Image (cartoon, rainbow, N blue to C red; front, side):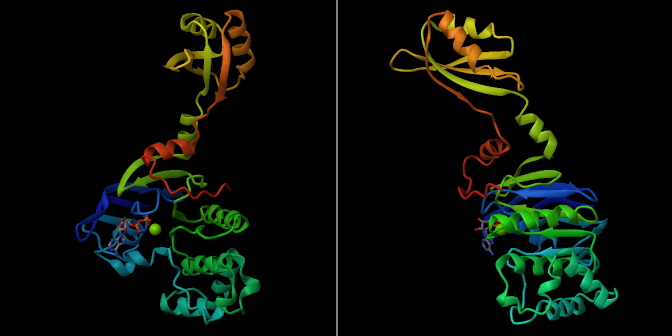
Length: 315
Ligand code: ADP
Ligand code: MG
C-alpha cells in the first residue's frame, strides 16, 4: 500500500504540489492524470524518494520513505520521465548493470531473462540501446523498473512520445503488471486504462475515484441540444410528453427569435424522431439538433479548468 499524506513541494516560491493526499491499495492500478505542469513528475519524484518534500509524508507498506529510504526504495520500481538508460550498452548488459546497482538478491540470469520476457525484449537482448526505437527503449526502462520484483511500480508518462501501436503495447504491459504489483502511472492523456483515477491540476487533486464509478457518473444520462423556432411553452410541453425525456430546459434565445433547449433523456433511447414529430405537432421548426454525451474527457476538461494540453492520443 502507498500512502501519500499532505504532500507539498515548493520550488523557490513556486508551489508545484499543494497539499495532496491519496492512498493506493495493494494490487491497484492508479492513473495519475493531469495536464503538463500539473505536478505529476514532482509528486512521483517525492513518492520514490528522489526529491524531498517541503512537507508531508509518503509511506510504502508502512515504511516512511524519508525515515528509511533504502528499505522503502527497495519496494519501488521507478521509471522516471526520462529513463536512466546507458545508451551505449546492450539491453542485457544494462540490465545486469542495474541488477548489481540495485543489489538485487535473486538468481541473476533467470531474473533478467524473466524481466526481459515480461517486457517482451528478449529478442533485443544483444542490441545496443541507442539503436532501439523509442517504444523498445521505454520497455527497457520498464524492465529496469521491474528488477528485484518490487511490489510497487511507478511509471512517469510511460506512453509519452510513442506511436499508437506502441501505446497499446505499453498499456497491455501495464495492465499485466497490475496482476502482481501495485502500479501508479502518470499521463497527460485522459483516456488511460486503470482501476482508479486521481486527477491533478495546478498542484491540487481535483478528482479521485474508481474508474467505473466515474464512467457511470458521466454516462448516467444523455443530452440533446435543440434549437427550434416556435412558442417556448408549446415546445417545452411537447418534449416533456416524450416518455424517455427526464428534463427539458430552455437555455437561451437567439436573435432570430428561436430558442435553445437542453433535453436530458434516458440512455438507452434515441429520441430524435420523437422530438421531430413533437415539433411538427406544435408547428415548431427545428433549426438544429445535436446529441452531446458528456464523456470522461469532457469531465476532465472541466476539472482541469480548460487548461488542458490539446495534444490528444485517441487510443
Ligand atoms: P508535470 O509532470 O505534471 O508536467 P511537474 O511536476 O514537472 O509537472 O511540474 C510542476 C510545476 O513545477 C511546473 O510549474 C514546473 O514548471 C515546476 N517545476 C518542475 N520542476 C522544477 C524545478 N526543478 N525547478 C523549478 N520549477 C520546477
Ligand atoms: Mg512530468
